[in-house]
Length: 304
Image (tube, rainbow, N blue to C red; front, side, top):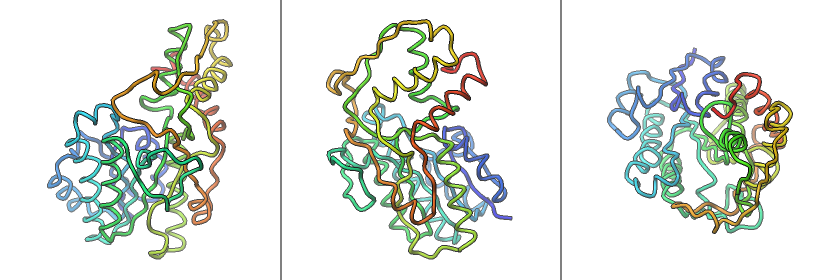
């Protein structure tokens, strides 16, 4: 039975991965309380104690705006820690699966980004995540770097829950309409990771399969269109919201200034991962509909 070390167990992706990885072996699921990823020596010691066959690392410093004022901490968690995991994976002969972000690109391209496109992060968060990607790639370990975008899910804080809360509290919302990407359910990421691992176990992939892959839901939307779809879906289950007048105003990025610059285009081409692992990545609307349904079926306050 394989031993799988999973970080970020209480995060959106980590929470879903605990379920999807269970069939592959013994999962050691940890969060910040068990292992502080800003401490390299602690990471090395922990990995050497549990001797994993597979390391799955969705943990990250994800406070995009706060990272602008905490660059050292963001770099420790996002840039240095993945490199430590990679070094230890190399020493053990373990596979490392690491999750990255659309923020490594500057967003100026008019078509979907491919894995071969140059990176040019515009924020501290993006720069530190890129540093982690580079460190993993340079380590020589068996690795998969899965870059995704606009993650949400039934667990944890995210855009879906925020919109549901604001829609109930306010009569008008102002949502950015000139940034584009693909909302990606954390469950899709977890299930896709499990499918990749299954293929890896069956075929024992050689080094040609290691590297960077884009992993997002299908399609493209703006934050404004995304918010409109969330509310449309929620009205099916929320009587108060269904009977309420709500206006969602489209605004430009400049009208909602934030410390960290966001990519205008976060659309990532998923052709490579589909061809390599045979994944089916549904339109973003499909997983969103299921998420909203589940949020309302499990709690009376889906935004909480």
